[in-house]
Length: 177
Ligand SMILES: [Zn+2]
Image (cartoon, protein in one colour):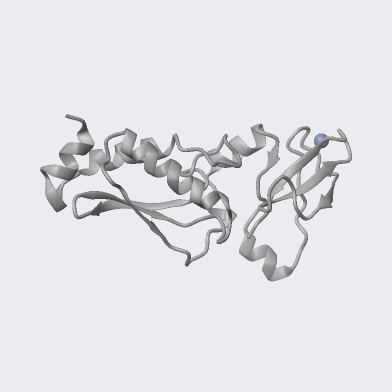
């Protein structure tokens, strides 16, 4: 019997202890963002909370932004990964408020983005929009802050396309929302 079957069938609503939640978090750490396959949904801060509902694993998700076509793919990937790990029929709840912000990306997620050649978001989104300052975006390749924006939209709508004026490499910037 796989662990998830035990949770769903025998323990009922009280089933699933802390160790199962830890295991569920570990499973979700392996679910990568379909657009940026080096950061997990946990690192991106899309997974907000885990718990139990009627004996099923309950997952609270906040998509990166409503209407993002990747959201449906992410839901499917999360469901598949959890079911493969033995969590029967996990319940995914989407919550749009408070809205996801790039501030929720973890430090390890930012490092993964940089290593992948995407400039992670700089500073706090809320503070910047408050003062209306254009952020200085450092090149993920050489670290130079001598960069220019080529396009408001990069490879996906969630990113802007920049170019480094030092090493001449173009790169995506994860926009703050
Ligand atoms: Zn550069």
